[in-house]
Image 1: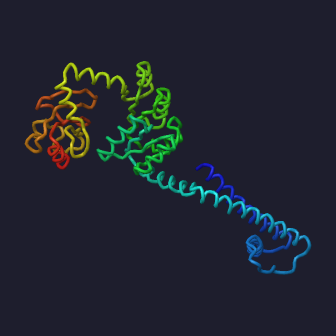
Image 2 (image 1 turned 90 degrees about the vertical axis):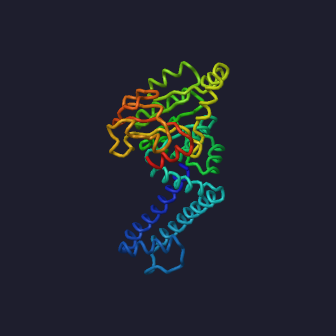
Length: 332
């Protein structure tokens, strides 16, 4: 795409240059006014066959020959370059990327997913199920084609580079998930985000135990180790199989099968601010039950008391059957 931009710019610069040279030459040699000189230049470089305004001297004829030969070369180069990109499909790809980048520029509060590997695919599936706005950053062309086929907004490029994340809208993003195969690359992404958008929540994948503390120090809000989680989960199925099976059934699969929901107190009607969970009366209104409370300092309270105050900046974790969760979303 950068090559295309440079070629188009080069062609435009050459066309403008030949018009400027022709106009200036006729003004100096033939003492034409600017309009007359521009007119002579245009009819000469386009070879439309119109006659000159008055008979030319030898110097003017030589200059006109130079102008014709130069313009033919420039326009031939322009046509061949345009045909090359048209036949190869790169021109359409260029405009497609421009359209995608325009859509990304309009996003606010979206999530950026770096890497479309195994973990990245699971992440965007979850985001898609929750109708979240997201952009995928991927370097592999085959994976980009796959994302295009799925209709997923994407940017092809190296996620460790500032310019790539800026194209993905990092300055207006609320969250970033970096699921690159290399811990070193994930670390670079975390450091880059901490410079470009300090308020963006960063979730990073890690393969090695030694990378965990480094990613946290670099600015990652959460660090996930898929291999460790997988091992713990398998062992838990041996130790407490029924509990794990029950928890697995609470896993949020999509809009119509969700059992857990997070509710921001700030999104509730103002009348509930500084009231209690009892005053909210979720059980009667929706059938859902409050099983967790997160205060503004990110302190988690499991199974909070009914007299727990709904203060600004806090969140509720709510449990319910899919239909009850849907009703909860309709009310709040």
